[in-house]
Image (cartoon, rainbow, N blue to C red; front, side, top):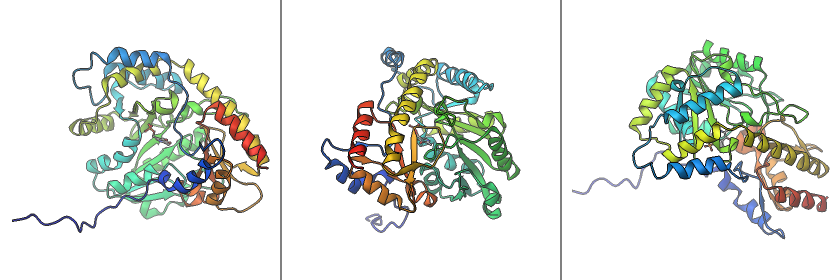
Length: 388
Ligand SMILES: Cc1ncc(COP(=O)(O)O)c(C=O)c1O
């Protein structure tokens, strides 16, 4: 007998991927003489450090066996040492777990935490944020509840519906924030962690832009971390993608509460979630070096200093914080929908992401990623000047 057809399945249908919605804008920008300059995705374009490339190729021949899911001792130790250096907080290698870049972790964490605690069914995440926080809740069959943000894009936890707060499995924080560039003060971070704990929720603090923390003058500033507030029921998420331009290699890690790290490591081991061994070696080498990060931090600061005045002269204003390598722009003259701003920018050849991709409160904004080459920065500036 034939098995019943699955042709009428009525389950989850993935929505269009946010950046795939930009195809029409891309076509407009591509028609500009010299072609499109893609500022819509935070995908690094600058080189990886030589030490990373060496470690990658040196480790490849010996990588005949399966790597550790949780991460090699060398990778975990390098990550723990970096956290100690960068944030002045003590974490041991046993409190670190590797992930295959952090997007898969962000998308998968709610599912794994809900296996551990099925009594809670809600994931809280910043109301203007990286779309994968909400998607991770959806993929887990949980409720995704955005935390309202105030006029400075800061979390307004007091405005969370008490029902959502009582059902919260997890509170996502993202510091510095994609897309707004805002960084919490240490007191705000402390208050967010305390709020989550008062409501019995785990904190997952995505700090993957920590190395690109700047003050209002554009100078490098100390990053904040949720680990300063607590370790119990706190996990921090870090990536090598932005810090060391390794997005194509897929390396990240999570650290914090040792019981949670052990649990997640065990479950992920059953799922075969392994970072390739040469990539782990390359990531350990990257984490041991801070000089290349300083160079990258200066590159983004220089790009901001060049691009922002040109965008301002063109009629936009940056309406976010000084950190990350994103500009969070809106029309300086008044209300204009973000898709309209993006359409006008596309006519100059610049492709940006309309702000509603990050939540309805971003509907009048666009996000411009400064992960473009210096040459592309110059072209963009010239094009904007020509279009005034
Ligand atoms: C806030 C945030 N978290 C996580 C990621 C995922 O980065 P990756 O998977 O490369 O580590 C990104 C990527 O842009 C991001 O912006």
